[in-house]
Image 1 (spheres, one colour):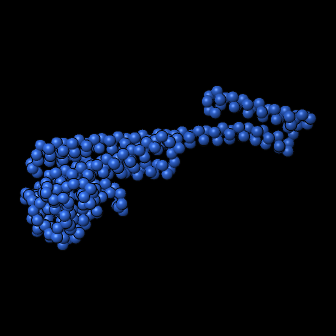
Image 2 (cartoon, rainbow, N blue to C red; image 1 turned 180 degrees about the horizontal axis):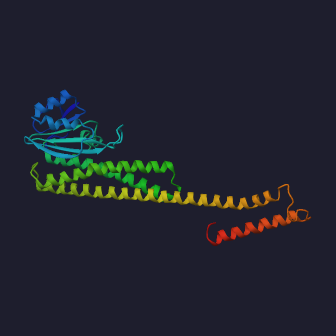
Image 3 (cartoon, rainbow, N blue to C red; image 1 turned 90 degrees about the vertical axis):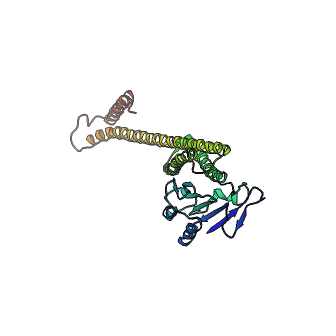
Length: 307
């Protein structure tokens, strides 16, 4: 579906146009091959580069061809059936237009379309910065949620079970997807700021620098949370291993202690002549002998901290 939005500095709201014009923002959601071909002809785009916009696993990068710049990035998307937690977003900057191509609806753009955030399509650079700022902001909110969840599980380290371990693995997967999307995006943001891909005034450059700093900080924060997850998993693994060893040690000690009376009782249960077999207090003597040997073994175990 292709939608054309337009708003100048004099307009009070974002308008939806039936066709393209100078200063328009064209938003294409899961476009068909025919729609992509139409966009290619209308804006004189590179069809080879535009073909990559249909790849759900496309990595962030920047391309420049025929006076048009193609910015590939990814945004957080939680309602998908893929094995990644981000979706591709392509922002195409031409001389008189801004084109965005996505395979799924972008929740971050809903505030622009609903008028909750003021955007002017004729200010291409500022619109581009607002789009990227909304994407980075959504990553920041997602990271805050993941950090809280990880620290909540970390606080209950000794109670971590299979369900918590699976949850940590899922957190790690989300964070890895985030880092994979933000690292190349941060690289081309720096490249765009230092080059002449688009016309930028001093205010725009300041906003771009803030955007770069925020992106780099997100990458470092995500890596820090990943390190915390790895530490929690290693610690839980060590605790589980130690608990298993303690259980096996306890069972081994109990087995040894129960084996002693079993051996003695077996010997004196044989139907043969045994020493002191006819003694009237033989039962109590055997019982005292068993208790003495067991007590001695327990003392040895405690001395060497085996028990």
